[in-house]
Length: 222
Length: 378
Ligand SMILES: Nc1nc2c(ncn2[C@@H]2O[C@H](COP(=O)(O)OP(=O)(O)OP(=O)(O)O)[C@@H](O)[C@H]2O)c(=O)[nH]1
Ligand SMILES: [Mg+2]
Image 1 (cartoon, each protein chain N blue to C red):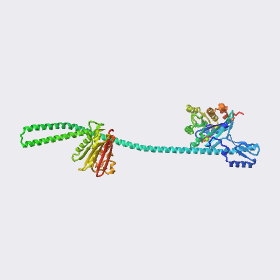
Image 2: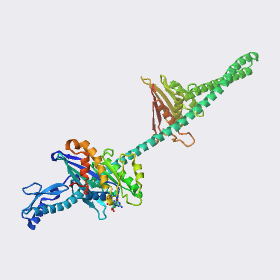
Image 3: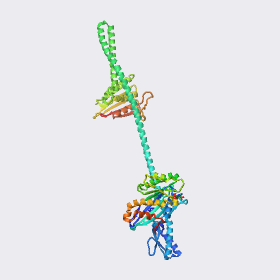
Image 4: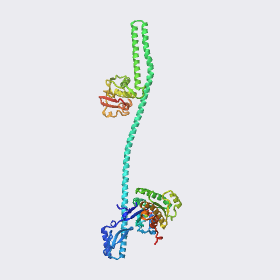
């Protein structure tokens, strides 16, 4: 859960990239690290095995200073997608304020997507989070791959869930990554504003929140 | 406990001795007096990790070198922190995994215990069911037997009553005719003897007919054709009927039966079943005694109108080890073919059905005493 520390006028939020193994969670985070130029961005910490599989987690801290001096931090984590790391996944997932589910668009990966989403539901419950209440955005990655499920089909399939519309991305090429992240920031703002009165007490409007936390290096204003 | 998201402070990452070693190494690079600490000092610049100031660095050197040194220290701390975080989450995950394992283990043990109790209960239930089935079977057998005995008795009673009636009245009329004949016949000795003999024959026949009539009446009482269900029972009458029947069925033997029947109130009961119970116990006694043996039948009552029936014999008795089994269905100590082995079982069930008690005491070669207690209101 979000941590507000009044003495330091500081708010910590936690976003977790979840999804099946090899869907591109780490790649998403690496892309954010290289594409984003928010007010504050820390070092990308990657904890992986030799073959590039996430072992514990990856982490990227970003932040902004609010008009009234609020020190807002957003820590972005990825979980290890491999089935056997479930305990670690749970530990990383606990106290998440927002979730970005990275699915694999390839046709032969649909079962893995479903299993990973089921695992997310299960683990959310185990760490005491309500799937209805946590902001979740779903991204279908690897759109550049040859045998992917068509976007229409995917959108239709998820149309009647709270997570529609889906985000399409090709993290390897850097497309759709920031858009997905913005969508999550937008949903996260709704929840955070409700709890911490970001606009009223800290002078942080929705647009400020989304734009300043996801400013691109290319569209950064001097 | 530290959480994954908590930002580490300098002391979380490096021990005092490690900080001192780092300071000394930096000093040897020509930076003069170097100090790295969590408190901000005069002239110190921040060392950052994760957008967070983890320590303050000061040294006796120019600003550029100090900045470069701070970056170097931050670079080192990044890898230290990386290790720390990995170690922490590994610890958390293992701990959680272990806790989960223990929880599962406990759940498993609980469910195993549950199944064990359940299987125990199941065994109990099976035992109960078997007992119920046995009881039902036996009741069925019994009621069929009682019914058939009853039907037979009813049939015999009906068939015999009428002929016995006219035999008796005919014999009486025959006696009258004999009187008439006597007047018409010569009064010599030979004729007188003949007539006397004739009269004896007739009166013996009349006696016999009366006895047959009584037996039929007893049979009727015994099978209680008239009242099939619960009614007021005169226990003494039922016993007498059973005794009568016993004597009839052991006509080839002289049974010595000592009847000590006390004054009894009527009790509610099923006369047919009670008669059968008494007969079964008496039958057992009759089989146990030798030619010169005797059976004592006693009845008594208490203030509340409860009744005790005691049937005692001085026959062969039975060994202690089989006494516990005598009420078991189909148990018999007698040779195969001499009975179903249901006699005492039926007696016990009947007494129980009347909310009463039955007790058997026996000594080998001394005799057996069966006591039946029948409550006033069952
Ligand atoms: N073609 C293509 N490959 C991608 C894309 N995104 C990621 N990949 C590749 O997929 C592989 C796995 O990517 P990662 O980002 O390490 O996957 P992950 O979800 O972090 O995997 P785990 O850490 O094991 O859970 C890498 O070889 C990536 O280069 C994409 O959009 N298109
Ligand atoms: Mg990864």
